[in-house]
Length: 154
Image (cartoon, rainbow, N blue to C red):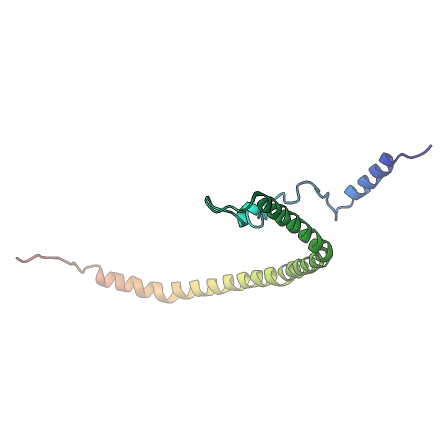
């Protein structure tokens, strides 16, 4: 009984999917949420364009297009190959620190402030109702008999 490569890969996939800390990566659609939809889509036509009446030689235009496209493609590949993992590590560290601060400092601080503000709100409301309500009710009774009449004299 020999195990085929498909059986071995199936076993790895099951172990990979069983671990809750990892999720399947789509190697085809690498921007499923369209984070960089309009930001970094730069093609040759978006950067270099020759208006009517000003055209270079066809060979120069084709060579420029090829040079731009290939250099952009390989420069990105080389930079992401060299710096992709270290930069991903830095971003992972940054977002981990932000999550830690948010979970362990920001949310508890906000909750504490809300609890304290509710206590202060009750004290303030009690003080207003105790001291201001009788004053304004008395003023309302005093001024309730006041009648304002507007006359227009010609």
